[in-house]
Image (cartoon, rainbow, N blue to C red; front, side):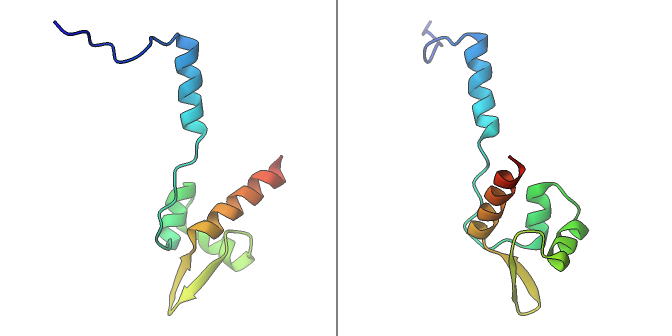
Length: 88
């Protein structure tokens, strides 16, 4: 019977540290422009919160395409980095 082990055995502490690093790594943003629904889903907030952020100019910067609001993923990433920096 072949050996099922694929790599070195990790201790429980090593396994937990590796999992924590993966959990701390933000998910990659899609390369397409994001809708308000995408922003609400990304930050796990109600859609109305995204609209309030836009009215109050406190959320990620968006722009209009006709009557639709869209967000540049790079601008959203910068906004998140600014929020993280301000909180520290």
